[in-house]
Length: 303
Image 1: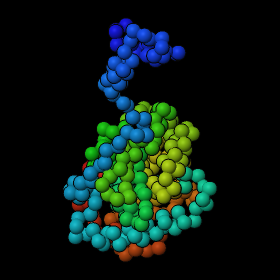
Image 2: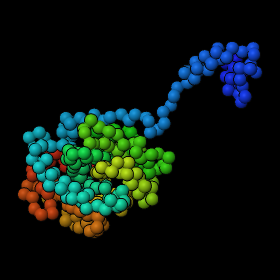
Image 3: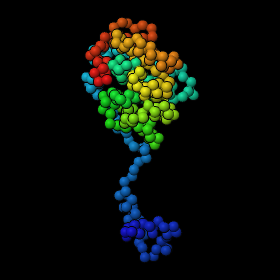
Image 4: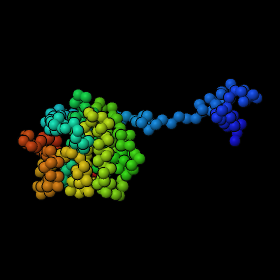
């Protein structure tokens, strides 16, 4: 033990006083203790660790087809307001004592290339514009991780890490952005048993914790295609609300029917008809002629 360590031990020993240390200079020892303690780095508690703010690059989102071109932005925003009303009405009807999963809205598709990630991102932006809104965009599409990639957070730990490790606090993984009212939860790390983890009570605990941290929170979840992923089916069982995205003239009718039958009427709150040239009709929302130059083309090319 060093001289300094011995001095500190004596100073802090039970019953140690100035009277029983006649040969020591108490002031010098206190100075030594203070010097040593100042040299020890203070590690903040997990809840005190500052999370970096994600800078949203709209030019990148536009160039990769995940937000509309500027000349189509206003028209698409008007159409998203119609879809948003369904979500806001659903939230207003919630019982205050309802489970956290009721504030989760999962956007999925029957097959790849239907535009569900495009829809998830733009719906999150639209909801974040609501007064006092607090939106969390969750990347639940672990095989593709489109949301994480386009926002530059594909290397961050996220949802699936929290599912795999009970010690991880889900709240600590939610990253704020420079868009007011919008945060993002990355997909995280791939685990072979991802679908098995999602069937566990752990997923329900995570859903509840993320929304109960803030009663204003609305969660928009981008999930894998419903007919091709066990993870998507498991997520659909856990969340309270599901929106199915269908590509006009592209998604086979049988695939839509199969997806709807898997979800059930209590989960499915709406169907969005993407890339439709027709006007809005009841129960469907047409996104005009955004076409193959937009998100559907991008998703189809990387799916």
